[in-house]
Image (cartoon, rainbow, N blue to C red; front, side, top):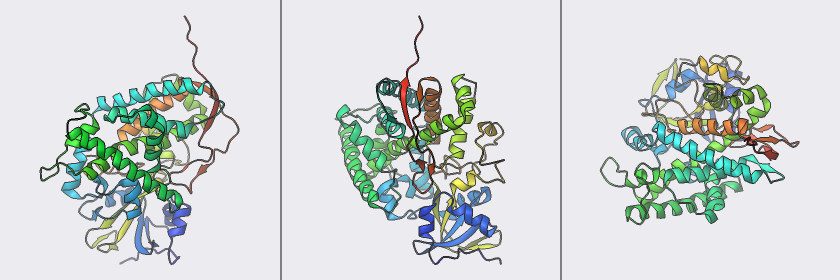
Length: 419
């Protein structure tokens, strides 16, 4: 039986944290293998990349997600008791609550709300000397998703609530003082949304029945009971937070429009179908979340390698999206490649892989695509702007990765209307 290659360091945590998006793929190339073993946070961990590894990773008979996420991630990014930590039937049942929100007309409605806010903010930017796009997009998406989800957001609260939602994904996965702020932001957000859940259940607030706020507040578990206040708050935040996090993709979409002006021209011209191709290539090409974790359910062998029960396994998302065995010239930005993509759920995994109704952990992929399309279309054809000198290099040591400048624009102009 072949041995899984092992990383040479006694513990590779610092190496992972310094280059989280490329840590696994670099070592897989070094060991000429799709997997290797390393100690991460002092625990033996099997790291995998590629389509075959992803197909294995999403085999529920071999892996479980229950109790896998470190406590420091549960207390910031995911929330404790949420759908990401459930397994098998409990996970599928809770997942259906989220999938019920993903009707195409509902997603289009969210896109339309976001488009309206882009118009509002563009008028404000027209008089500004300097606009940091990443921060502004976080606010646009916070306003849009709260309105869409049936979550009241008073004007004086917009800045504070945006900051809280943003803090739960921006630097939440780092081991730094910013992590403490992220934990505080989650506690505040859970109190805010917990009060909202109670108001809905008590009849003091009646959002639309198709809204996320109503669906989550009224959802019943497998035993027929309502979710407790905390869990319901976590799950409604699991609608709000990931939607606001699409700001990362949108900032990268703006970078792509700058670096590949032919893409801007095709979007501005309204070329049929091109917005979808562009949005998908943004999600493939740029870094979003580096990896996902699971734990081996029971001993098994795969390609001759032994996976022992209880061993933690990490799947490389970014590296799989850049695997040259799947993607021709993966380091080139080419939206047209998605005309030929066969829809395989294991080679294109920017937000995870697998079947959306069963084992895929991110039901909001369609929301991400819609918001990227709306936003990139507006940036390409809804306004014009200049870009001052700035550092647009991507900081791959950051979670989430971003252009170092956060993408700064100025001299924003609105289109003139001819009579």
